Length: 237
Ligand code: CDP
Image 1 (cartoon, rainbow, N blue to C red):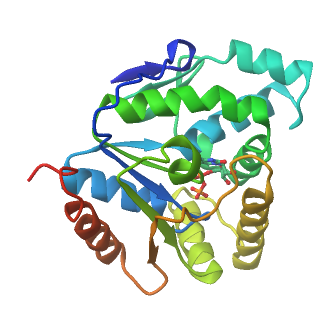
Image 2: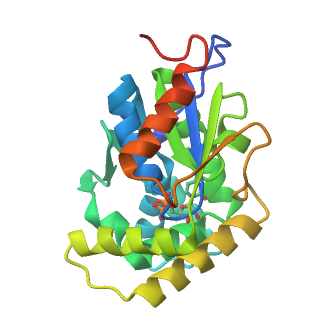
């Protein structure tokens, strides 16, 4: 599958949408759960946070500030962002670990507050979500991107548990980080994500809440699979 942001057009097909929306705060385990769940039920996965991270990374590299400006308009107009399978391609180059650096997390959250950035990514997300049975994870998937998703999951966990997980992820990439600092950054990003004007992080009224604080990854994937199999016509058996 290859999708380019430049030719993204949402389809207006009203057929049953086979999308599972997973939203929740930073570090709740959305990425690992989405990957595991996608494998378990044969769906593709769209990590929308990676798209915001790619814009944050492109802006950091270009020295563009996180505010609406001519510089940002030009950056977005020239942005060569696409997906090869699940890999983000920025200007023809695959980006993986570079997207997960702490300064890129901050930049993603800063740029995600801006209307022009969110508008740029909306059609792309909708087009991919409609192209195949898909697990889409982010902050506003059940509320804004796919408000008619047949299953919405709000995945959360305590700030301590989320900071532990983020620390382990960074360590795996060879990045040493401090627990208190990692926790503080996560809490700050949650506040910014929850309090921004457009598409803030919030639990959709019709979402199923899964609290992962005391659960292992396998247990969370199992709980989410049960929810998916419980929706008629969503998963092929
Ligand atoms: O992996 P983690 O939960 O730390 O973050 P992420 O899902 O990669 O998202 C990075 C940032 O992108 C978030 O802090 C949000 O500010 C922004 N984002 C968003 O605004 N809307 C989405 N659908 C996904 C991410």
